[in-house]
Length: 105
Image (cartoon, rainbow, N blue to C red; front, side, top):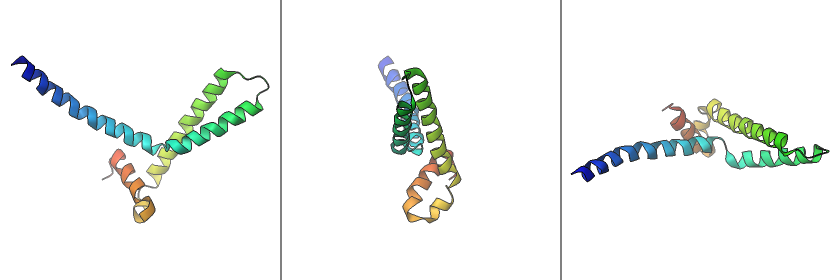
């Protein structure tokens, strides 16, 4: 009898975990990781070429800050353009993702 209770509890825990994972994946998609990767590579190469002596700690901090700014800018772009993108066939999927994550149904 007690093992049945564990299964019931496990089911109630599993459903919110899947929903949170899906929402986290949607939020990560809004940051445009492919574009963010290219921005980080360009910043890293620029930092490497500009340094007389390569110090990895400031370079890591600069790249981390660059990643945060690029992801934030991409997410802000989704938020600002969520309504105009509905009318364009090419960007309708992006717009529905933004409305889904931000709750503008």
